[in-house]
Length: 263
Image 1 (tube, rainbow, N blue to C red):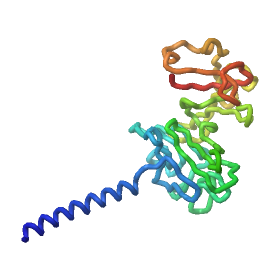
Image 2 (image 1 turned 90 degrees about the vertical axis):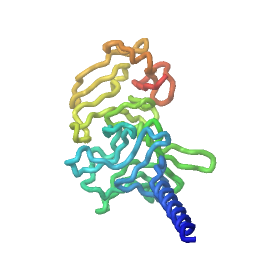
Image 3 (image 1 turned 30 degrees about the horizontal axis):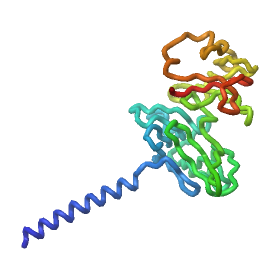
Image 4 (image 1 turned 120 degrees about the vertical axis):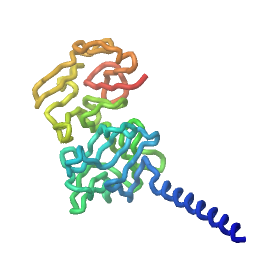
């Protein structure tokens, strides 16, 4: 009888451990979406559905107390950040919270009550959410009765990294000029001195500016290449398109818009 009770006790003990592990897994299961009323605290993250990208708070190095909201590659051991929300307004501690506020905007709050606006959304209801997609795009959407409306997306506000699916250049609808701007240094993601973008005069050239002065030119775009850039095998694997930034057409160019996608 004693042996039987001991056997039952071991079974119950193992079952309890499995239940605990299951609970821990569910509590820490990664999500790609946060909704109105939820918060992402420092130390918590969003992970895209396929596990390619992760969003959360980070410091650029171990000696920095500054905290930033960013997106980085999930599967690369060395953290490689591709987008920073508050690059020029870092938090000074780990009290930050990423959330959708009562006005329907995506904001970063700290314990002092400071508020950094990431979006200036036009949400008309509280049925909003933020999703990190597998291409690295953070998308702020509103669910209506008949459709889903994209209010804002990080691909429209790049920092220093150009990802497949992004577009650079002036959007004819929003009049916004999408540019890449370097980090100040390897340990400082604030806006640096170099900027890459389309020719503001409307040609098919792209430039790198150093503090507003032209540092490099791509030359005109023709036959799927830029005249002043060397040819490489890269174009065999990627599709480079120039076109109207207001839509997905790659026909006549009325503004400079560059997009790269995988074939």
